[in-house]
Amino acid sequence: MLLITGGSNAIKMENIKLYLKESYDELLHHVTWPTWEELISSAKLVLVSTIIISIVIFIFDFIANSSLKFIYEL
Image 1 (tube, rainbow, N blue to C red):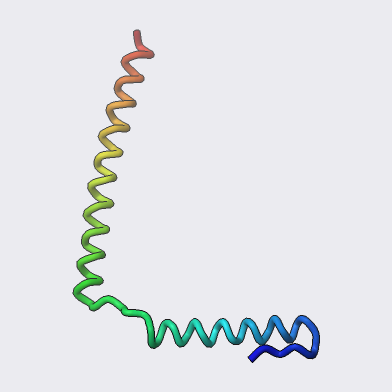
Image 2: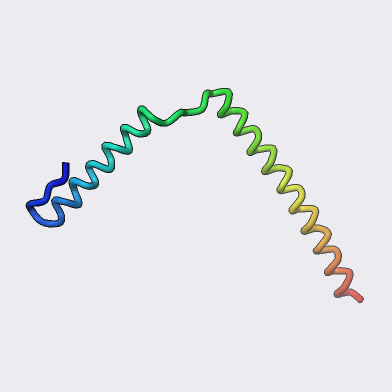
């Protein structure tokens, strides 16, 4: 329900209330949440991917650093 009388502040407050009510309803009744097993599996995947990407970046950084040291020492 949208309140038209009472100025723009009342309209904004009603819109905020409506938004919060609809958001709560959406999260409670319409969102499909992952199971605990799916959540753990996804967390493991993110952890392993982060470690692998960190190692690759470390290797590239080490190679670039060594190469630049070699070039500057010529």
